[in-house]
Length: 230
Image (tube, rainbow, N blue to C red; front, side):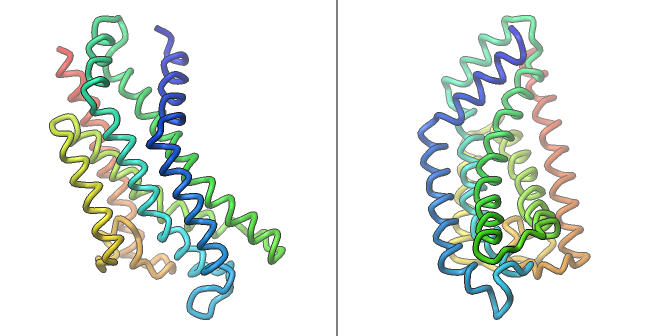
């Protein structure tokens, strides 16, 4: 089986799934409402295109994006998906390679969902304020979203190998923290809502740790897949 064919099939299934389309629509609609109600006026008397305003916009969208990511991970743990793995195990393709293709499809689907509201905000800045200095803002969005996404993704694919319920526990935790706005120290704040957007050492260290742990978990899940095939 060709790797490119499998990857295209996997990403098409994700992008056209009901769960993905509904969560993507909710994310875009909420982002649009934030542009009209919060971003346009700025946060805490700062400019609409300040680091604080843009960071608040990103962290407000983060729960939607992370829930979408975890739902995509949980989708891979369904019994029907397990049967697909059984079929693949009978082919010459190593199971870790197949899992990497699936992980890549999830990563691309999440990246698209995250990029759309960020690009919409940049276009809003350009049209309304004629502001196009997006470099620092783009870096902020990557620091706020990417490390946490890698950590959550790695945790989900590793724990999900043993129990699908673990992924839903993570999903519930994201919901509880975001809905009740539970304050967390910058070092362990996955959602990033307590970041002061000045890139403090604790916040940057937390981003590095999240990224490192997430990568280790992803590699561990691939090793687990190989062992299970054997």
